[in-house]
Image (cartoon, rainbow, N blue to C red; front, side, top):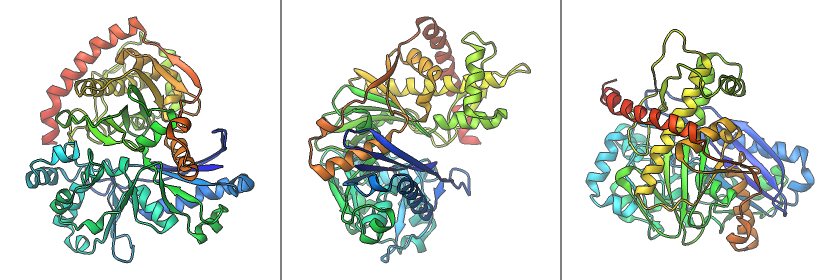
Length: 489
């Protein structure tokens, strides 16, 4: 038995997986995000740990025998968050999250301090990344900065509470701007540029390797054997890749979670920072990946559900399906509710519904959201291909994978066949469980991280593709026209 724990933005999910890689049980605890000022996005790490204990209590309550036979635990988590600890491991302030946009000026300052930062990190300095956040804290909260002894990513704070160890791994650390991504090690130059010491960084392991063992008191509370190995784990996207078998060159996936990710696996380091493509380490030795990242994806559907007063997301999707492809009056939607990364790198970008009238209906707004997110993925695909990405197959994971209509729109916009796998909606938690297995058994990743059985395949609809291509051209033109206004608002 193995457990995967995924610390997401909206909740913590845990899955219990047997030796045949079948999901035995799963549990979820919700989380809230605080936005005390414009562009800010924060969470209290204490809430993460409480939620983590909550999901483990649920698993134990329903499957005590199986939980008692667990051999390995894997961790996955939202990337880029700055969890600041003092010398006694006390949290100094709320964690600044991946979708926080306050540190734009600090990104410029970081690249000024290290002119070759893009060649070291493989990435543009973006407000979502971790290092610029520390420059912001140094400038605006100097008393807090002076006490910083350790900086941990969200999942690695959970590891500290589980295993008492300061450890991270390559895939998550690649999103900090402190890692030399090609060399797979901390960059002293990038660390010094944020006025930190190398001792502030955790130890690094590969995601499929052991990254600590469960503390006795935690093991007792969870009902897991004492000394259970905790894998290095992965950032949420790399963990999702492990779960869906995106581990060899040419395989890719779309993740329709809170954010949207187009992830392409590769066997070499291939950056394209000018187009805001992310070049990160994968969670396996000697592997890398490229990503386009869109800060709002399935979260846009949640937003539209509230906006239209619909009873549920499923209810709104049902209305959209009933309206059909020929529904009139569907506006254009720019899905930048929390800014955007690929390809615009614009934390000031905002959501826009354009072209509404008196007759605009809730289903029309819902349809606009599905199309707008698909158009953002088209921008991301173009940036990836420009970076030399090889895309042979595309799987779909995340909560948005439950919508067949969204899949048909995406396939038609991208011009690619999309594959849906059993358990794909579980995503990173399942991949984390696989990493927990690898750390405990020492098996080869290729033999464990296979593609799950295919549940459905969605092909592009040529008629729909032609209609959406015309809208995509207008959608891109809309962004160009309104972009200057984002800076003024």
